[in-house]
Each structure stands twice: as structure tokens, then as C-alpha cells.
Image 1 (cartoon, one colour):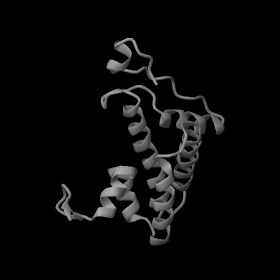
Image 2: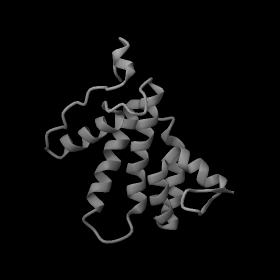
Image 3: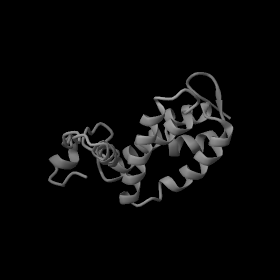
Length: 142
């Protein structure tokens, strides 16, 4: 067992899930209903292997789901965990494409968010330009 920053312990499953879900989604996952945790684990197992086009659609869907359930009482932590995990995975893919961790350029999550916003009849967010070495070194942004 390893210690987390708050003094609690993390087992190997938690460590594996944190790598896939990210720390925020892991907290939401832990607060989710037990029946939903199993579904989240199954979903998370597929997340990193999704092609970008499918991943963007998945982000849009999970963002919309998370926004929708905010209007209802109940434990929706599993729904929020999926949207947060999409953000984490998009950041991982952004870094894997050569961007540094401080880059503020659009990610696949941004594309999914814009798809969700447009599907609801709103205007998409403006494009955020890449701010890291990837574009200053002559390469194109992702």
C-alpha cells in the first residue's frame, strides 16, 4: 500500500485506476454507487485504446451526461467520474502528441466539449492556440 497526500492508503487497483481516470475522477469514482463502480472500471479499460474520433464522441456524451444530471438529486458521482476521466485522458493524449504539460492549447476534450455545446444549439468556444514548444519549434499543434 502507498500513502496518498491526505494520509489515506491506496491499493494497486486504486493506483491503476488513478493512472487511467486521474485523481479527480478517482475521487468521484470512490464516491459513486458500488454498482456503478464496476461499470466505470469496464468503461475505463477501453478509454485509452479508443481512436481519437470515437474518444471525442465519448467526451461529448459524458460531458452532456454530467451536465444533465446536475439538475437532479441523487448520487451522480459515477457520471461525473466519466467526464473527469475524459479530461484526464485528453490531457494524456495531448502530452503524448508532444505538447508540454503547461500547454493551454485545445485538446480532444475541448473538441468533445464543443461538440456537446453545438449539439445543444449553442456556439462553440473559441479555439485556444497551443502555447508550448511544439508550435514554437516549427511543428504544428494538435
